[in-house]
Image 1 (spheres, rainbow, N blue to C red):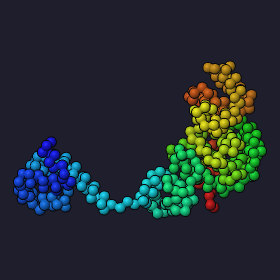
Image 2: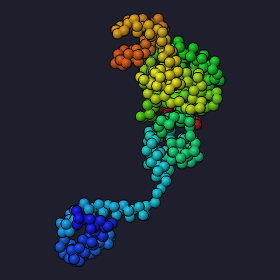
Image 3: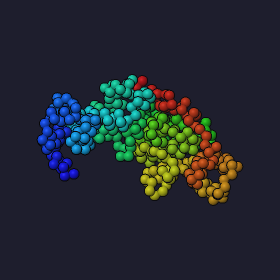
Image 4: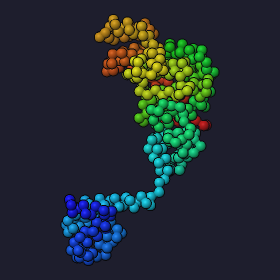
Length: 383
């Protein structure tokens, strides 16, 4: 170790070899003869014009009694230091890292959101992203930390979720709907309630919401976005509800829709866009650690699906065994689909493996009558 310490000031492999030769009283020619190599090669290594590889490092270790690792470490440090001198930071690289690393660009191109043909065509993709995010330049795209323009959303919203939100807003901004008012919002809920009796009745939802002044958009979720719905306002009198229908179940559809409608009625989403992700389990509860706006919307959604008083009574009378005939009988009494009771039972009991036969699909009933983007369809934005 003491022998190595005397070489501690060496900053390159060449300096280390030169110092070791001086200690031994050798010339470069002697070293070349001992190693059986050309003297010119030794000169180039000492002058740092040729790099040391692992094989050469082992040869030097054998004759100079200095670990091969020391030569390789110095070579690595020297190469990096030399590269830093000539390297020039490029802000555009950092921008591309944020855009291409944070956004599912390939998926956005495939779904027709971006006017570009190949993700490798960087200029075309950046131009398309600028248009998509309604930015004045690529540096002003909202997912970049230094962008001045920001949609008011939670800090927890990811770039993928923000891209989905922008698509919903693009589509919603071109819709023509009736005039919204709080009275119209409450009227919408009254008209929607009877539709919960059968899965196929969900087809009437888009028309009712449009007539009541609520822009209703269905956009298939992007991969890993985990979004269920969103509520925001284009202006003071233009509420927007966007759904993903990522869970094609009757209970989930009505719960999420009524949840977002409550946000609209309470005028949530005016100051901050509300994106609801993974709206199930604890997030769909009214526990105290759930944000107040979400507790309010969750309570309204659960009450809409199955009145709490009826659900409490049913559980108190039938728990822990819930017979099929009892679920069907309660559904008939309340004039709702048994899937809504099944969904609430799953939530209240935590037994998501039970009652699944009632959780019928609704997507096929809704999509033909709604403004849809996804599942192979591209919404006619800008046409």
